[in-house]
Length: 126
Image 1 (cartoon, one colour):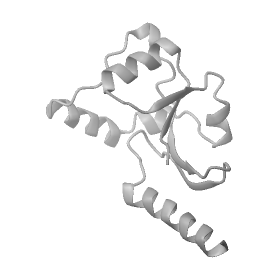
Image 2 (cartoon, helix red, strand yellow):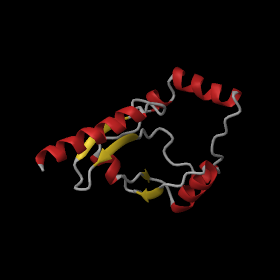
Image 3 (cartoon, rainbow, N blue to C red):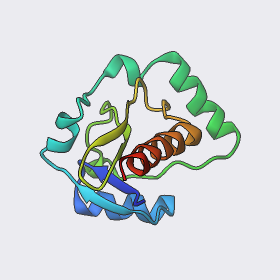
């Protein structure tokens, strides 16, 4: 299994984000957001600026959890919603989780279960 981070930002912004977060996954840049659109992802001021999200972000600050420090010239669409997707090696979508807000992610168990279900299905076909 391979993890790939997809970003619509610039090369400079992507490199800075990888450096500041310590993320070691390979990153693919999608400046025209073709991949984002193909998975039905969009932007939403209301979902990103929801009180619950802002409250949780404030709790991160209180817990001394750092956020990447981006220069304003590198900030892209703050309201872009992401998602988590699991694809097999043929491109078949095994798990699709478009985020309802910036903090909405599937559990690790959900991702692993989707991978296990596909493996079991593949093994049965053999």
